[in-house]
Image (cartoon, rainbow, N blue to C red; front, side, top):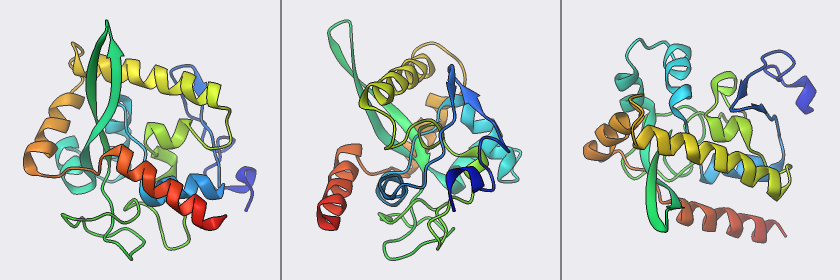
Length: 194
């Protein structure tokens, strides 16, 4: 199925954010991200995902479906800062599909079905919806910078609940794998593919 034929393609379900149009990719490399490094959410994703999953309480939705990732490392005013990110929980290794979270889960995103399709595609996390392996590095960097600015605002001054939600999950022990470890797994899978 091509991108234009995807049941929730932007033509059928347009979504824009931070001045960017949504991407839709079924490239092998993008599915690897779903399998090894689910994309991060921004504050703007929380309410729509909460409602999409049938919840009224974003804290309960997060407890059931998200984890706190160590997130992005950024440099501001010469100092290194860590911006924790919210990401989808992972299914147990060897599983696919929407499964209950396991504390040591390192499998695919819990929203990736057995056919490697995202079951929350219409409300996919920001990084899933706005970044892909097909875009140029310059475009990917531009989008990542814009997202990091939003994350900075969520962590430093904007009362949007993002940092509070991350802190709740982190304290509960619902922690994601460090991005550098997930990237290493993606590179190994790409190398194995040849």
